[in-house]
Length: 298
Image (cartoon, rainbow, N blue to C red):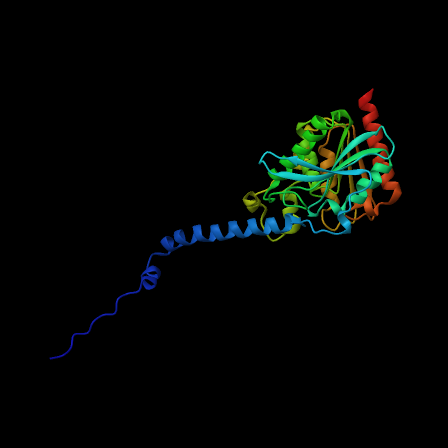
């Protein structure tokens, strides 16, 4: 008697490939979309935030005219900063300085010391997850919430008058300074090497990515749109040789701002103008801040 031939069971994988193409495509698309979404989000975070945590050392030596400040934010955590008093009192104004996306406040302490010698009180601070500040930065809303909290600290606890408060942002810090200035009163707004929007930066950073996909980003950083709501004198500064944010984005922010406003284009200037622009550049910033708060006092 001949043995009956038993057919091998069809594997699930084989059966899957026997499905009509349109069904397989409907299965593939959500998987591909999910992978693309999370990959883009990860890339976005990697290019946007470069925090450096606190490490004891000489860079963290508190200036003689400074004091440690801890400010509670909406999440219940605290952000850390240094408040430096002007060498000569009374101060011309108080500057709330928002640093860029890398490092921490110890990298810009010299900026605060420089301006304190020129007659300004200074507040420099670290966003959540930077330096000694608690928590972790995840999106633009964290930047805004932290800057809001420090603004409140200066006005409510230090007694700084809004018309004597200058918001100064550099690079990513311009997004925080502009956001706060668009919603709250201040004496002046300084925008150094600012980005006009996350989408505009996406074109620069990911030129291979169609602009339609920018909607998948977590951050918007719509500075060019927000600055239209700022009701204070605005100075926009940008270098023609900025290797990080093209000068056209600075011009776009300036064009969107209300009068009175001033545009400072530094020929050959790089990304950190306060450090590379020389005394002439710093002098223009200082003169603008002094004139703005004096105008507010009239």
